[in-house]
Image (cartoon, rainbow, N blue to C red; front, top):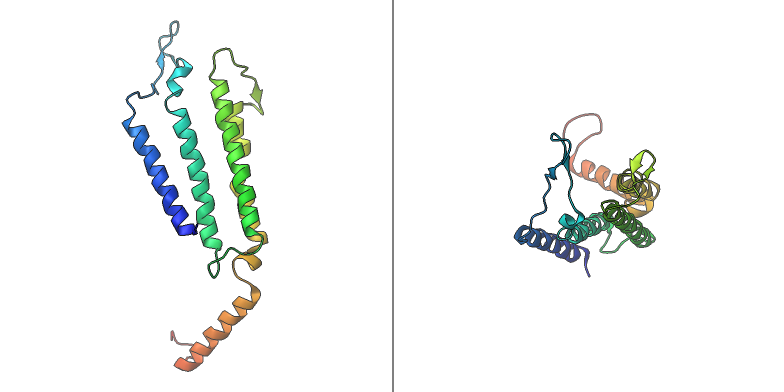
Length: 183
């Protein structure tokens, strides 16, 4: 499937998820309920409030991750193809990103269960730890891949030299000199 068509399909799927969530009869109680002892405190309530929206939120998150990688692949495409090695790196990154996101959602689902182990990891509840130590740094890996492979994936030194040659040739044809003038 061509990358622009895939991006369009992902966007349509994201819109469909939003439409389904918008039309759900049951809205989750996001404000919580009154605490029985401390009147100024609110508490989350039962885990059933997540049953209708958590799978849709999970799907929306996964589609967003796939969209992120598809747009990146669109930017890397040269002459209609991905550069050698970039496809494998993008697929691996997608798998890792999706896995960490799945672990985040599963840890959140387990965290809100009654009687769940709510031990902290790195001074944070486990879902927050997955977000801060897993989801947040993953785009940095893509940035590092982009930096390390820029010359092969984006523009090579030969292409830069060819561009500079064409730019100099164009200046000569228009009668521009290097010392002055705006062309």
